[in-house]
Image (cartoon, rainbow, N blue to C red; front, side, top):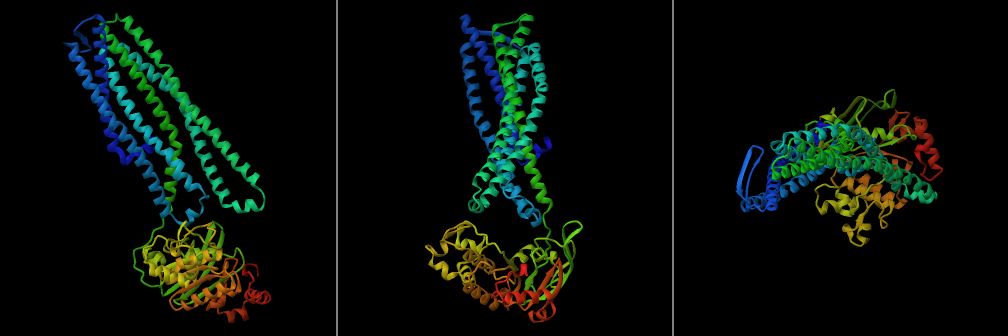
Length: 585
């Protein structure tokens, strides 16, 4: 547990130390104040103006009024110390939460696409929000534990100075209760672990329901979807109830035993003959406050333990992402002259290859089509081209060198991608085209013109400042796809990979984009997954992928003569006006 706590608050050790020192000072001030209160109260009851008493090893000989002023000063000091004792724990909790989220998202950002793609939707959001929030609660509980422990120690030390036997009785009972309640604390940790998992499942279910909202409406399964999510809510409710029950039961039991502690302490005092009434009052007050801080120690320790499953889940996700980070080289890449695969194979699972022995070479300026039936391996090939996945065997070469030797920044500047399913930010048109990159308005407009979306944008209410998003009513599917094409073209890439860029466009828009891409062929190396024959019109050569193997790679004319799959697809397309889905050929 303590290794996780150290990792959690490691960057806040200085603040934790400051909290400990401040708590000790506050504890001394409180102990002295309680002793003075007891002595002054006893003197006032007896009508005395002067106090002469022995408090433990100290002999007090002072006017009551002087002691009142000293008590007032100590009270003010303790009051002032509450400011750092409030500010520091709050700052620690906020910094820990922000640090957890920052580290986690940094690790996710640097993780491989293979690791990112295996995450269920909604999982990262849940870990970064609710799980990180409850993990940071562990930091707050840790600081509370430090404060309560320091105060408990100081008050107990003061009580020992006044009455060793009574203080020893309190200490023994406090420690005994700590161990007696240990099984309940362990139960609380187990319940918290179940709650953590239930919250992740709930978040995943809600994210999935949101993504499938359209289909849910179309198929009329709203009630079934509601029941499914309601079931996840019910599990979370039950897990939260049991977790909160244990979290409250343990400190409440401890609190109920505080009175037993005080009664036992009084019994010890009575058995030892008592003493000066002021000293006795000080002992009782100190023991009562020590017992209350003992309860805070118990509650804070319980809360820290029940935060462990959330801390473990956040730290585990961070380590998982970090372990999958991709190492890029430092070699400069200023242009892409050739792209080649040498006997490249890839498997998602051992013994089940998706690609086998793929070998080809492409020169700058070529437009390459990639065809084949569904499941042939086309998308995997593109993922390797984009360095989203690393070959299981073989080599991926750019300009004759292993692609992983090149600097990451150079690679991302020279290579762009347009997915089949457009994905927009909920932001302005210009921000969607820029996509977090530093580029001026001229570059944005140039890209929009190349993607044949500029004229459409100018008809929208605010032009390039128009807000668009994944479900924006004003933007059609074809317009979203052209915005994504503009995004890809904005940085003037040298390699452009497209997953059927015209699948959602009307024939006129399709012809415009193909004209634009054809005009760019001299500046770009194009790789296009073609789902219909018309996409191949701009291609100089075509790859045919069947069962994970490159069975043919040549011009359309040669493939028409020599490749049965391509010839069959061409004949079928001729009877469907070019709209045949090549995946179904």
